[in-house]
Amino acid sequence: MDCCKGHENSEREVVDIQDEKNIDQPPPPPPQLPKEEPKQVVEKPAPVPKEEPKKVVEEPPPVVPPQEPVRVVQPPQVEVELGFLDDQGNIKKFKFSQKPLGMNFNTEMPIKIGSFEVPSHAQSRGVQIGMVLAQVDGESLTGKTYSDAWQKLKAAVSTLPSK
Image (cartoon, rainbow, N blue to C red; front, side, top):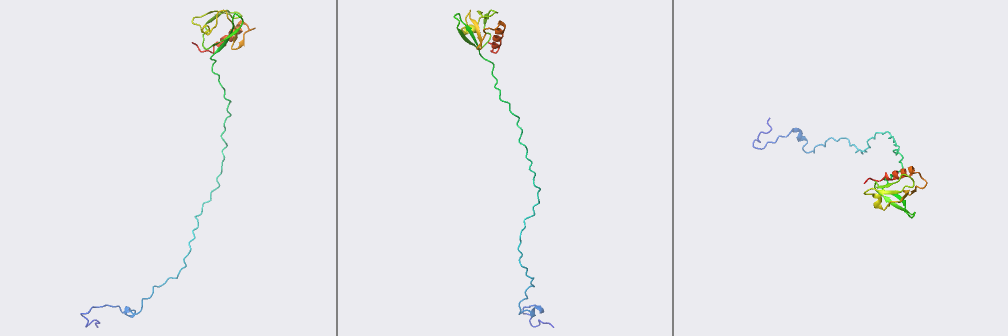
């Protein structure tokens, strides 16, 4: 049997028979899953790997060698002071800053100036013929041999720069 006979010009509606039974009823609710209580999420810190205690190795302080005291090096003597007895017996002191001194003297005690070289540093400083050498750098030549006096004079003058 044709269920749609006589309704040929009408719109056709196809309805599922099962749906006809449930047309007046609302659709059943979807199946419910058992309600779960919301779980509180407690974040635990990630486990920290245990570190071995660091060994503290204290280095000894650096060894500083003891410093030697600062030695003050005296520059070479740049002046020589010679004391001469004048013809009245007074000591006159003269300072010399270069060599040669340019004076000639006898080779016995007392050391007496006999002449000068030309040019003469000693003569330009005021030394005169006939004066007697009495001191070298403040040290008296009284009682010394000619050799000792000559060595003292030679050592003092050797520290002077040459002209």
